[in-house]
Structure formats: C-alpha cells, structure tokens
Length: 469
Ligand SMILES: Nc1ncnc2c1ncn2[C@@H]1O[C@H](COP(=O)(O)OP(=O)(O)OP(=O)(O)O)[C@@H](O)[C@H]1O
Ligand SMILES: [Mg+2]
Image (tube, rainbow, N blue to C red; front, side):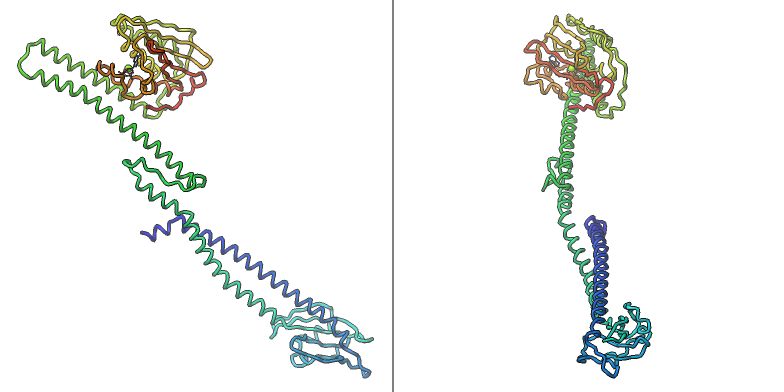
C-alpha cells in the first residue's frame, strides 16, 4: 500500500525527472570535457613534434666524411624518435631509441617527407610521425621525428575512467538530493492533506495551515480555506434553515393536533364542531402557505437558467398586483395610491418580479393598521427604474433593518399576531436580485416603511446571480 503510494507520488516522479535531466546534462558535460581534453592533448603532442622537428638542424652536424652525428648524443626516455635520411632515402642518422624500436612505416613516410603529422594508431605503441625536408649544414636532408601516443591515450583513458565513475556517482547524489528537496518542498502538501482529512462536516471551522501565503502551496491553502469558509457558511445557512423550517412546520401541525384533540374530548354541538374544523382548516392553510414558500425557496437554490427574459410592462405589473391585493386593503379600509410615471419596459422574469412586488404590497397591507394609506410609485431615474412600496404603518425599527430580509425573521408584533411565515421579504430580495436589481428598506424616520426595488438599466437584459440569506 505504502509502496504503491510512493510509486504514484509526485515526489518520486519529480525525483525521476530531475535525475533523468541530470543524467542527460552530466553525459553531455562529460562528453564535452572528454572531447575538449582529447583535442587539446592531441594538438599539444602535434606542437611538441613540430618543435622537436627544429631541434636536429641545430643539434646535428655534418662530419667531414659526410656522415651526420650529434654534438652530444644524450638520448633519454623523454626524447623522441629521430631519424635523418638523405633526400634519396638513405638513412644517415638515427637515435638510439629509433635503433632499438624502429619507427613504424619510417622509410615510407621519409620518402614522402611532406611535412605532415601522421598518426599510426594500430601499432604498439601507437605513434605519431612528422617527416619533412630540412638542412644540416649545406646538406638537404629528410628529418623524421616521432613520438609514442601511449602517454596521451593513457591520460585520456584515465580521464574517461574518472568521468565514467563520476557520472553514476553524480547521478546518485543528484537523485538523492532531488528526492530530499522534493520531500521538503512537498512536505506542506502532506501536512495539508492530513489536516484536510480531519475536516468533516462537523469540523468545518478548521482551516488548513498556511506557512507562506505568497508561494504556490500557500495560495492553494488560502483558496481551499476560502472554499471552506463558503462551505461553512452555506452549511450554517442550511442548518439554520432546516431548524427554522422544521420549527415553523411544527407550529401549525401542533395547533391542528391540539385543536383536534380538544374537539374530541366530550360531546359538542354542530356549531362547536364547525368552529373546531374551521380553525383546523386555518392552520392547514397556514401550513400549505408555508410549504408554498419553502418550494419557492428551493427554486431559488436551483440554477438560474430557469429564469425567462420577458419584455415586462412595469406599470401593468404594478397595476395587476395592486388589483389582486386590493380586496385585502378594502377589508381593512386602506387606500392604495398608484403613482406611475412614464411607461418603462424591462427585460426579466415577470413572474419572479411579480412575486417581489406582491410580497412588499402584502406586507404593507398586513402591517398597516385599518384605515392606513399605502402608496406604490414607479419612476425612471438615471440609475434605472425604481418601484417603491410605502405605507404609514408602524414602520420597522432601525436596529431590525439588517435582519428584516433574513429567512423566517419576523418582528415580535408580527410573531404574536401569528400570521405570516417570515419568508416574504427573503423571497422578494432573491426575486429582485436574481433579476439584476436591488431591494432596500429606506430609512423612513419613524413614519411607516418604504421598500424600494431598483432595476438598473444595464442589468435589465442580463439577470444576475443571487442567493438567499
Ligand atoms: N410594511 C411593513 N411594515 C412593518 N413591518 C413590516 C413590513 N414589512 C415587513 N415587516 C416586518 O418584517 C417581517 C418579515 O416580513 P416577511 O414578509 O419576510 O415575513 P412575514 O410577512 O412575517 O411572513 P410572509 O410574508 O412569509 O407571510 C414581518 O414579520 C414584519 O415584522
Ligand atoms: Mg410578508
């Protein structure tokens, strides 16, 4: 298991790549070094031969009997082979070394005497020979100098040996170094993985350690932590929503159950039973209203591709909503005034926007006491179209402004009245924002409340993404 993990690890792959690269680089470097040393040693030998070619003309003398002899014959192991021929090919002089070990192809090369250096590699030892014309005294001669290539090849073989031994050692050292480096560089990844494994739905508060936020791994950890933060808040919202939803669903269910149980205790007349059934139906209504809202919320969480792009007549929409809820206002002897300026058209999802206006007007009617005044105005401004719903009801305390759009939030009076689910404004906000607009509660300075929907011109054709709070 550990072995197969190691085989698949980035660390091993990095090390292998690094080692392979090192092998190529070191092999190229060793070849270049060898070629350079070979060429410089070889040309050194050539230069030496050429220098030694000059030497006999100064060190040899022509004796009166026509023979050639050195002033002082001191032959040693470092001396080259030296032979002097007459232009006709007669051997006039040779050093002791040349006498003992004849120069391979000596006569042939002397006959050519072209001043070129010839390498004869297949002899033992391999030799390098230079034969050329010269003069000793007044006599034209062919001088032939030669040297063994053995020391040169010995030197090159030693170098090759060092390189061949050094290469694998260098590769092993580089591989080990690469492995250690890769392990050190990737150690934070292991730590992050260990840490991430411990982060569960219950421990979403945990974050990955960030050693250096500016390097690649630090940035990865930061992005991961940001994702965790988003995940945590969405989990938190979901948890809160589930709790609130189950709580809200339980209230009408308990009411139905209690009313039913009380109704079954003892005998009652028809009117009493009707009353009991009536109040049970009321609670059932409330329950179905709540379920409708929850369905709406689930729609909000689904992708926004469900939205349509209708060409909406905003004045028509406001009139329709006012007419639809007018009955409720009449029941409470409230007046609804419409102030519609111009005839703006807007592109977006009409049904969703209608839901927003409907919820705002419904609230205005519900929370404004009997005989109150409600105004719905529509105006085009430089920032787009504004739809405002205002009333002269009790208003909403400033400290609640930040909470009013939260799911299931209801101000206390509303809660005690028992009506509503606390989802209306939350749905309205989503409906407006998903259409690219904004829903705000204006500061009404203690007189009633004013909700404003702003639909900016540029967003009218391009709905934006919005989510529930
Ligand atoms: N026009 C208003 N005047 C005074 N208070 C308001 C007004 N509109 C909303 N509120 C307050 O905001 C709270 C939240 O409103 P929201 O519409 O979200 O829920 P709801 O009306 O209680 O229930 P629902 O609309 O889901 O049936 C209300 O309970 C009420 O206290
Ligand atoms: Mg409402």
